Structures are given as structure tokens and as C-alpha cells.
Image 1 (cartoon, rainbow, N blue to C red):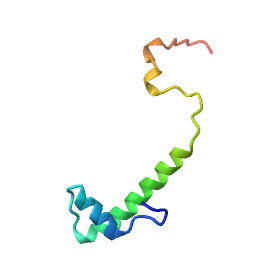
Image 2 (cartoon, one colour; image 1 turned 180 degrees about the horizontal axis):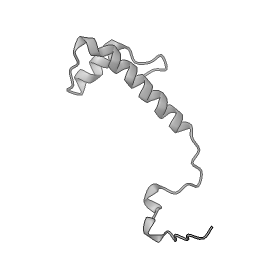
Image 3 (tube, rainbow, N blue to C red; image 1 turned 30 degrees about the vertical axis):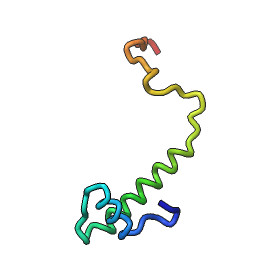
Length: 69
């Protein structure tokens, strides 16, 4: 998908290719939704997680809960 966004005919073609044919009145809605998802993912890709360990490294049972503040 280019930076110009997904067009309704492209959305219909990709959906059909995935085995999900769309009614004609859904092409523009699906294209707009795909563009929104793409913009959110693009922002997430820009985040720098640095030394953040993967979620699998977190062990909730090892947490120490202390009621004292």
C-alpha cells in the first residue's frame, strides 16, 4: 500500500484475493478502515522500545506486593 492510501477498488481486490468478497457498498468503508489501521501501525513502528524486554520476560507471580507506602 502506498502513502496515497488504499482505494476502494484496491480494497475490493485485496478482499476478494483473501476469499472475502465485499458488497459494492462496503468498498469505501473497508478502504478507510484499512487506511486507519495502517496509520496506527505506522506510529507504533516509530516507537523506540530500547531495552524494553519482550512481554514473555515478565513474570507476574514474582512481584512483591507491599501495602506500605
